[in-house]
Image (cartoon, rainbow, N blue to C red):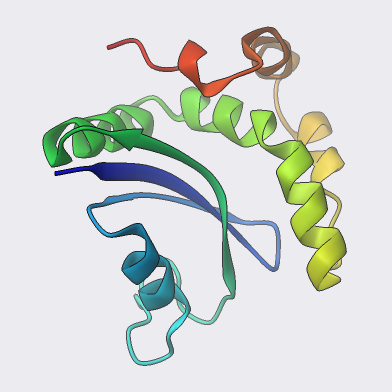
Length: 125
């Protein structure tokens, strides 16, 4: 069964990392007031920023766990997704600048994201 590890973007520029076997349902749950997760996603509008598909649930959840243990990898993934974030911001009229993410993080992460160019760089399977 296919599964996904995903990165969401909120209307305030925050990101959320998760994994699921049903991506559409999970995104709908994040945005549905009846299913809001009160710890991390409550009260925000979420958009799919980046996603990696895996062949099994186990692989997707292991990758999520790896990203959460090694936050710099999540930062690199976020920086790689800046172009998509800019399109989301323009489409929905949000009031934050995704380009400012590059200034917020250590230049080593920015350089690694620029060097990587694609998510496959992050997948050390």
